[in-house]
Image 1 (cartoon, rainbow, N blue to C red):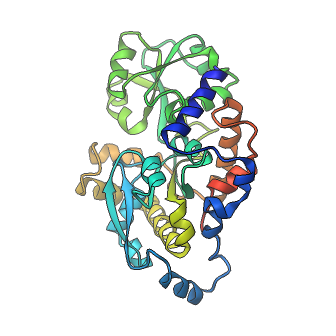
Image 2 (cartoon, rainbow, N blue to C red):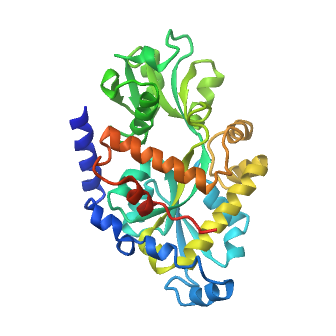
Image 3 (cartoon, rainbow, N blue to C red):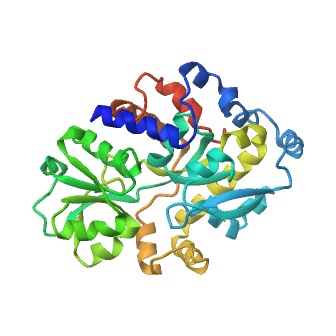
Length: 350
């Protein structure tokens, strides 16, 4: 299994057209873009404004990649609520499915997605850094409602469905479930199948459990077909962690530190507003065709998420996840956790 995971990590690097950074390169913050992210911390507001006017993207449209859905909606909702406008930044929403690809190639300046999706590419050299945690929760391991299985321990030797490949976000989340429960990865069997086929596979016994986004699972839970067995949304050992992060292209951050800070500030305003206004938030998603479920289900789902994730919590969670991924050999276990964290984590300095 360790050999398989090592191969997967290598494939991720190749597919994202990057070369893993050595510890020496990781230590060179200026090269990977983190130096520019923090140059504003000792500036007065007047100095920031003057520096902002000299940035390459000053007065230009900044592209936000949005892949749809409730989980990554804080950044686009900030356009509707006028939070970017308050910061003086002109943001254009563009559609797409891969935040890592869009940020790594410069097709977009910022986006958001699961930590489980973005951390490995970012640590391995894809040009992106994380500006803030967005919210907790949103993925759960399910079994049939009438299943005999009550814990991950009982899934030893059984088949678990994941949907974005070995080494993808579903796999990485499941590995952390197993690790917390003292179960070795090789003690379960992972099957890669399409999300839309997972319910049928569960029904006919091809698999015994499946990891699903909470949003996708809503109708099946309501119909009494599935129930949770492990969750990053509700379980005590995971529910405090951010699930998704705001990510920015690191070259953009290096060259436009004030603009980057303003974007992070605007998304922070949006996240804080969402936490206090979840019904209106869901209505905005519906009005803009950004949601595929009805409002009642959306509101109930949104209430399970905490959008006021603090930077300290996000930093601590990233550190823990980096250590877990090193243990699983999803990341090279020779890298230094502190330097990798410094490489990928760039919030606004308070």
